[in-house]
Amino acid sequence: MKAAKDYVVREIAGDVVIVPTGKAAQQFNGLITANSVAGFVWLNLEKCDTPQEMVELVLENYEVEREVAQEQILSFLQDMKTVGMIEY
Amino acid sequence: MNPFQTENLIEQRICNLADMNQIPISGTFELLPLCNMDCKMCFAKMSKAQMEKHRPMRGYQEWLEVARQARDAGMMFLLLTGGETFLYPDFQKLYCGLRKMGIVVSINTNGTLITEEIAEFLAKDPPRRVNLTLYGSSDETYKKLCGNPHGFSQATHGIKLLQERGVPIKLNCSVTPYNVDDLESIYAYAAEKKLPIETAYYMMPAIRENNLGNQDFRLDPRTAAEVKMRVRELQYPPAVLKDYVLGTLDRYRDYVPSGEVKKGFTCRAGNSVFWIDYDGMMRACSFTQEPSVQVFDRPFIQAWNEIKEGVSCVMLSSECLSCKMKTICSTCAASMCSETGVYSGTPKYHCELTARFIELLMEKEKEYGE
Ligand code: SF4
Image (cartoon, rainbow over all chains, first blue to last red; front, top):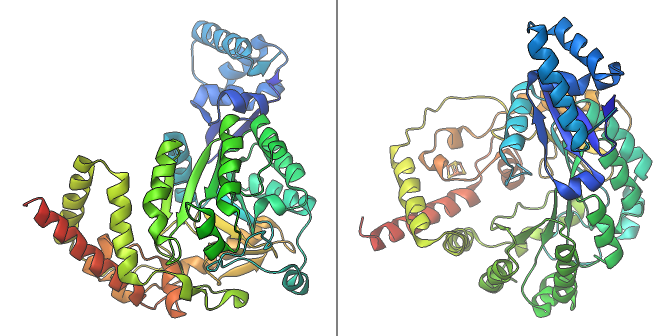
C-alpha cells in the first residue's frame, strides 16, 4: 500500500501531516493532520501489502480489541482509497 | 518575523510544536538579488555586475539539496523571494522539486512579470500563497517609487491572470513618502478584488552595504504611527475598531513591566524560523546580520544549530524590557539591531512611533466618549 502520488506524508514533532500537491492541491490547498492511530497507518502504509496486514500491525502497536481494529482500520483504508488518497 | 500571519489552526499548531522543539519549520530562500524594478527603499537589490562581483547566484539543484536537508530537519513552509523571484532562471524546476518533497511553498513577487505561462504553471500545483507587493495604485506612483512607468498596469494584469486560475494571492503594501497618498485607493483596489492585504508602515534601515542610506525613503516615525492607525480604520468595521482601540489602551494601562531579563529573541526567528540569503548565508531573519552561517559548505542542521545557539545568547535592550509601551510597540530584535547597531540598543524610532500611536488611540477614545 502507499499514499497516492499527490499526497506527501510528513512527521513534525510527532504529528503526522499530509501535504496535498499537484491535482490534490487544486482541490484542497491546505494541510491535513491525522490522529495518532490514523497517523500511524499513514506512516506505515508501505510496510503493508494488504489492509489485513495493516490491522495486524496496528494490533501489535496499540492496545485495542481485534474486532474494533478490524472494523475501523479496514473502513478507514477503504475511505481513503475511495477519495483517492491511498492506493492498494 | 512571522511569515504566516494568516496561518490557519493546523498551521498554527504545527508552528507552535516547532517553536517548543526548536524545529526549523519555516524558512525563506532569497534566490537572487536581481530585480526588474528599482524601488527606492529596497534592501535587497543588486545590479548584475554587483552580484557577480559579490557572489554568483546558486543553481536550483544546490537549493534543492539545502531544501531536502531542511525538510529532513522539519521544514514544512518555505517562502521563495528575491529580488524578483520570477527572474530566477530555473524557478519552475526548483518549485516542482520543492513540492515533490511535500514542502508548502509561498512566493514573494512584485507581480509585474507574471505571464499566462507562469499563471498556468502555478495553477497546476498552487502555492500556499503568492504574496504580491503593490507599491501604489497608479503607473505614476510606480514610476516615482520603482522606476517603472508601467508597473501598476503590469502588476494588476498579473493579479488578473492568477485570480482567473484560482491561485491564492495576498497583497503586501509597503508605505513610503512616495506612495502614502495611494493608501486609500490601494485598499479600495484590494476590496474590489476581494484580496487580503497587509501593510508595512515601518521599514527597517538597510543594513546591507549596497543599500545603505535607504532609510531616507521611509516614513518619519510620527507619520508611520498615523499610517498604522489609518490602516486599522481602513481594515476594521467601526465596532471592531472601537473594541481594538479600547482593548489596546486597557492592556497598555494595566501593563506592569516585570523587568525580567531573558536572553534570546522575542519572536520565532532563530527558534523555528530561518532565512538564507542568495549567497548562502543563513540568518535568523532578513534584517539580522549576526549570527550568520554559510549553509552551502556545511550540513543544514549544523548551520541551523549555530543560528539557534547564536540567537539564544543575544541580550535585547533592557530599556525595552522594562518599558510600559511594550504592549503596543512592535519593536523586535532585528529593529533594535538595525536601528542602533547592537541588539541591546533601544530603537528611538519605535519609541517615537509608539508614543504617537498611543496619542492617536487616546484621541479616538475621546471621540468615543469613553
Ligand atoms: S522601542 Fe521604545 S517604545 Fe518600544 S519597547 Fe523599546 S523603549 Fe519601549
